[in-house]
Length: 167
Image 1 (cartoon, rainbow, N blue to C red):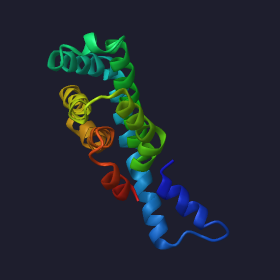
Image 2: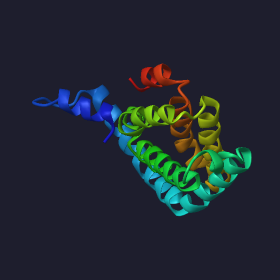
Image 3: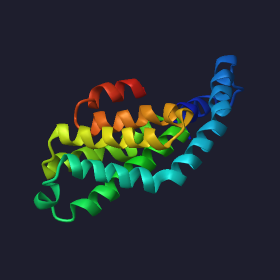
């Protein structure tokens, strides 16, 4: 569940929700159906999105397989994980969840492997571009902020900004 909603419900323990809290909960609930429909669409198109993304990344960086063992399998795994976690964060409408559950540790790993920030940013912007070619505009409108968050945080460009926005 969305961290803001969980915090609000925890704060309201032992009392009734006030008007502002009720509005927040209704706003969250009113968007759940659309976010679940978007998740279903993303799930159905995941393999095409990932396949096209990996193909584009290897086209843009042809020496990748020479530099890194199992580069293609790792790229498929990582892109799939990012798409799935981004989708779950979208369903939850919770960018902090995405940071806490995936991006913080994954950024550390990518940096440790020695990937250049521009390569990481290009890779995850490519994921967003390819998703945009497959998904409806309504679904992309919901998913895009989370994919942009991935490109920014994983490349090291938006660690502070993304955390601030999530609060």
